[in-house]
Image (cartoon, rainbow over all chains, first blue to last red; front, side, top):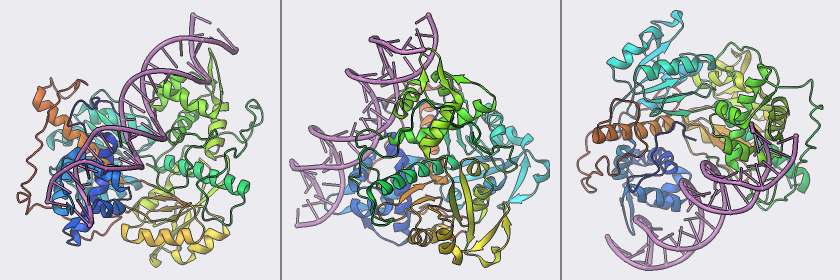
Length: 270
Length: 270
DNA sequence: CTGTGTGAAAACCTTCACAGCA
DNA sequence: TGCTGTGAAGGTTTTCACACAG
């Protein structure tokens, strides 16, 4: 679910598959937990369980980084932590700017997981003059006028957008204009960026919609197969399921349309 | 990046690929925007651009839902909105419980994208007695003791966890115990759930780490190929890149280790 | 003649299963 | 013996390219 282009077609070696990269942070988290408990080594089986993947996948993933394990034994926890951190670029300092200090922005600013991974909040920025100067998570919020200055002075290359959807593209343009080349977007908009800029998005409502899809399926199966209770739906399942609904009665959905969408006050809009 | 099992191996028809399901909400959002502007029809090319995907993919995706377009013309916006909504199960009402009303929980409670998609916040729940009764987003927070009651009385099947990592598994167990079968997890933990329960996770720090990885790559390429500026990294690129670092000097990283991890106060921990 | 719908090819990712090292 | 590392097989997803409906 990455976005911006730039990723060369996995030319020759050094090309760690995107799917693997996306799992490295997961392994890292599990390893850090082990490290804190002073566990010296771990097998692919154990680590996989802790990270919520299967062991074959984990071993394949690690094989792209190099041969960091010991046959018959497992992986050295501390060593792996270091190797993965380095591979992800977490051994260096990443100053980030957080734009949009509403509910979500404040949550992000307070989020411990950033600071503990080499990410340093260089500035909190918001368009609301009333917020200027107020500290959030111990950092005073700055007016968005200072955005370009902060980015240049602190060499920020990563920006986080937590503004309402309407402001996101504007903010994005300013970030990119000032030199930011990676953007994490929490606003429910598709951002247009020039080549060479990476965008990743996190959309709170999309995830729920995907859950709803599967939930609906489960309900359909239950009705068909009359499951024992709520638990234990057989993976075999029936095929047909849940009416395809005749594909031409577009008249039958006039009044209940797209739902209650007004210009909501708070954080975002989908 | 779904999780829980249950998804049959795409048996026969009616099996919409997971990758497609994950994009439907995106199309839906783009379509809603068009709908608000009273645009009657849209081509795969236009819609794809608005959703940030390519048109071939979009057409394939829609072909799994049925033939809802008109050759030579495009798709009827309102009709598609309806079809996708129905496919995703958004034409019905989904009561959800939100557990953990910290910074993030409050942001979620205020998030307009939920209410406007058939998701209704049935209850906000927190373990902190001091929060009980206080309204967040117009809804009074309840003590977590009432969790089971709310779930059963309101027929909640979807739960959202926005607690600190340490509390997440416990909360998850209680949700599942009370009948919830889909969970959206914002806490940075791997949740163990019985078969038949779906879990999706959103991890704020993982996304940043993935960005850091690519950012690091860009920096490496620049140094090697001496790019013109910051823009425009050629997709061809060189192969070698960025030192593999000798794989055996595990001594050389003693003091700077895993970083400053203490028991942070706020929202989570990675 | 425009733009959908879709087989077929290519790319990518996961899983299997086992050789071989510690 | 136990567990890693990895070719090979099997799935899934994306992309291509074009027949054909409107």
